[in-house]
Amino acid sequence: MTEVKDVVVVGAGFAGLAALYKMRALGLSVAGIEQAPDVGGVWYHNNYPGARCDVESVDYSYSFSDALQVEWEWTEKYAAQPEILAYLRHVAERFDLRPLIRFNTRVLSASREAEDRRWLVETDAGDVISCEYLVMASGSLSAPKDPDFAGLQDFKGEWYQTSFWPKDPVKFEGKRVGLIGTGSSGVQSGPKIAETAEHLTVFQRTPVFTIPARNGPMDQEKFTAVKARYPEYREEAKTFRIGSPLYSTGRPTTDFTPDELRQVLAARWEAGGPALSGSFTDAGRVLEANNKVVAFVHERIREIVKDPETAELLCPKDHPIGARRICIDTDYYATYNRENVTLVDVRTHPIERITAAGIKTTEKEYPLDMIVFAIGFDAVTGAMTRINITNKEGLSIADKWRDGAGTYLGLMTAGFPNLFIVTGPGSPSVLVNMVAAIEHDVHWIGDTISYLRKNHLQRIEATAEAEDEWTDHVAEIGSGLLLSKANSWYMGSNIAGKKRFLVAYPLGMPPYRQKVEEIVADGYRGFVLS
Ligand code: NA7
Image (tube, rainbow, N blue to C red):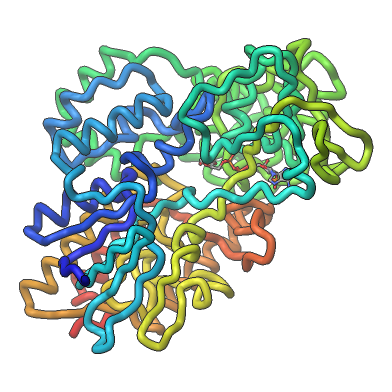
């Protein structure tokens, strides 16, 4: 039997919970659908050891309720996964959102009903829901890459994926563990695994730039001061590129003598956190400027890592700093000084296959009891292209986005009326504080639905022209940035066959916010409302 709702929200992570809250507040009937047995989204699934946010806790949290932001006590500067999940569970309960959500339920398809007025959503639990608006809060880094390594089925030991970590504790004691992947998940889990494993072998293809987080207990004085004026603090946060405070000198590297530059970088390294290359206005654009920052980080790596050969392998030399996701870490480089840790370069000697006993590279076989895959995600588009979403012509999102994900502002895609995307491709999303981006988008979606209803309009759709213009605009800005010069998940290049394009709007929240506001003020320019 077909149920009727105003809105279906797909996903119950940060975006889904915010959307459910907003839709219900507008008086709409809403169904949330979540494949996991609980809320949390990526913060539910990525419970691997060491999982932690790289945005400060005071900023990586909702602003929609002042009572919530004042009552919640973050214990660390950068919250670990269990605390973020506890926060999201608290939010779900405090605002009574759980009854709206169907857990353990996966959306299989969404298609337009015959008269093209409503979406028909079907799930693997047999739900068939007819809704006016479909809100995709399915996540930007939520579609894990499959560990499709040849021979994996032969492996006699245990294997795990960081992006889908078991809920029962995994024991590393007495085990020879192999870790594939040195992105954020590998950088965070490696040092924790090394603490108890008999031996950890890290299989590195591309070395990563990572900066000490200098995490620690929450500075209570600072936290109390923020709480005393949280709404104003959030308004100020909106003026920063990433939607939350981030240090920058606001000047190019050329303004500094080599000594001064060193001092700035050393101070940033000591302070910890992600602002290093981003501290200068030219390091994201000019290779020469970027190289100065790279040289500084190489020096730090060589200083920390005692074995010169390992240090050299850890120094990223094939991409500018910031062109791939910069990580922040706790003891990452120092981990390679442990007796029980080995770094293997699988750029020079790629992994050939997984065997019954371990991992075989083109050079040799490494016997292992456990393999941990920290190999990343089909970023930004993957969660949506994995669901069969089709429009009235039968065109699927997966097919539409095969040659690059065209969207208008990252919020809607032409040909798919009343389908709203939270932090979609072409929006700032993964290049900014995700929670800030999510709240922006959810507000916009809520305001837009209110506008439609007030004006007795049934439908909103991006025009193909507006979409092309926006998509070209994002690509053009990207082409002037070092960001587009590396192979990374920002460019879709971690997924075989994925079209190379910059998945996010790179200029940050303030110009994006302004652009969206202008478009709305101009009668939703580039959208057709009917
Ligand atoms: P990332 O950043 O995509 O990192 C994945 C890592 O896995 C990266 O080092 C890859 O090397 C490596 N990888 C993937 N496939 C292979 C194969 N086949 N062989 C060897 N190495 C491989 O994912 P994360 O989960 O760490 O982080 C994603 C984001 O989530 C993170 O930035 C946070 O924002 C949250 P490659 O670079 O492809 O050479």
